[in-house]
Length: 349
Image 1 (cartoon, rainbow, N blue to C red):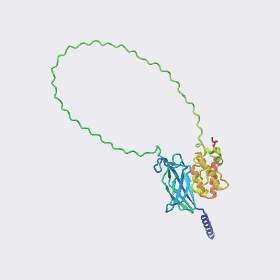
Image 2: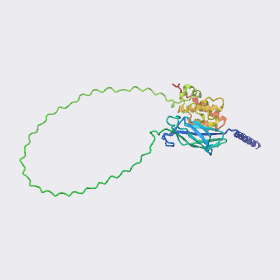
Image 3: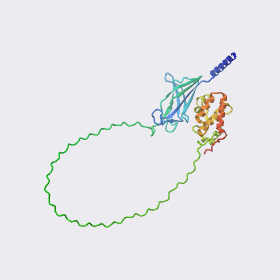
Image 4: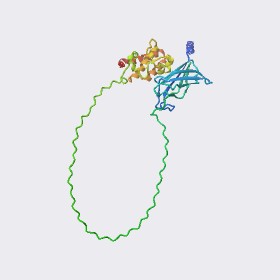
């Protein structure tokens, strides 16, 4: 019993030391959408917009700016900002910096309303804030946006026709005495017309032969449908750069995999840098997870779908080092095609 109490006391001291030495950070995340109809709210026609600058401004009770931070949205329209320490961000708000040529073409003429920061949860010395969707608007609404219907004017009732008065019948005329008929004249015989000769149309010329289209060339194979699995070395070659889908080499790892990965690897590490990791279990996991993510975008027959890669990555970081190595090995086997599936890359033109 004494040994068990000593072991429990040691574990509590280690946990307290680790918690006391942890570096506190505050993370702010959100998404920017293109408000194509300029209705000031999310709708079916809106889509995430990339390349938009978002600023977070904090003010004091006098309205003076005490702290600000600026970030640009990714291909998914997401942004993430990190504040050192654990500052109080309850009086801060996020705003799109509109009125410039940034972002997608034609959707940065003006900005929507600012949004306040909401504290999602707090753990040890870390705080995670979320921001409601921000809007960036074009100069005028798109032509396909629904318009408010015009007011309908009620139709006036047609006037009721007034019947005319009934006419009084006139008195019946007395018939005059019948005249004696004169002798009927005998009609002369009618001349029979001569038959008119029928007009014949000239014969139609023969139709030209039907034009035949040349045979269509065979369609190229669709790489997204075919089974393909490529290791991380293939994804780093410049001749295969065109196979990067939905993300690019400069996309931040934290934006793709989420807050747990941002806590472990930081917010500045890119996917290209993640492919170069080796020598450490956690960097090996990031390398194989990044390759698996790219393979899931490239082939629908890859064993892991995109959300599955992200989930397994976060689950591994929540476990032990052995769990990290086990997940990295599974991703590596999937990226190698399990010995049956090959990499279907061809050099980009």
